[in-house]
Length: 345
Image (cartoon, rainbow, N blue to C red; front, top):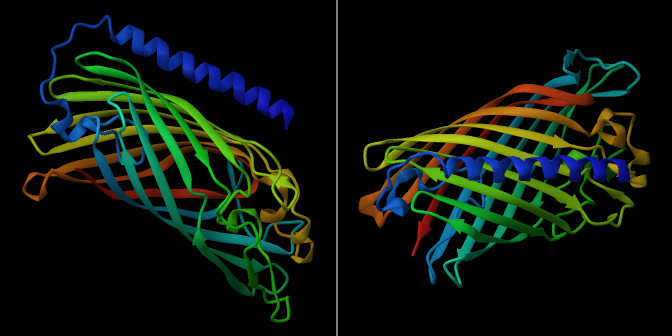
């Protein structure tokens, strides 16, 4: 764990240096100031990026996001592996995670915007018992880890801004989700790590966000590092995570913009182990050493401002992985999708 934390800090520092360097270099590029930046459809990042802007003093924003991640098939390293998985009694087949994210933001000053985000999750995973090919599904749902966040404006010009992000996730999600298995005689048993709705720990996520706006297009980047502060009540800690995004957006008229984004993710194995999983059959999802990995997603997005509805913003983003390297066998990601709306008043 300590080695990984040191590695994360080194990589996190590299991301922060990259953001700051690019911000400095872009300030040397000749540009034309864009008027009424906040009214542009690309004044916000793609909907899959959070903490990308500050608001005017006294403004509120209500937001809603529907997020879905679909996983199908297993992967070890960069190679797909077929089922039945050797050395396991049960093989995971697919997983679907749906999240409803409700948010409220408030700007006490023009430099600082605060936010509260409440996620509600629904997770299902399909399995196959290797010895008899019997298939079954486990499910869990509930409120996830509520987060409190702040975005602070470090530097701003007519066409750019550099932001400091800081988020604290509270341990409001469950780490004790249970379900009935074909071999549990009707008794609910503890579900593996990916089926839980929370981390069970207080998690801190610092980062930097940079945005640059031209008259008809814009680009931005964000680097975040999530650090789990301690073990949870079940004696384990989810892996720390690095999250880096680079995007560009092009305005299409006065109301719409299209975006492309690359999102690189790196997360580590679970540290420790949930001993309550002992009653489960042997399955990769209960092995804490098979939870880490790397992934790069390519995503396309749309932002639309409904001028006739008090400038309510509607947005969607959909993407697929272009690279995956998993500590497996582990379910691979096939699709990520976000649909959302934002209203400022």
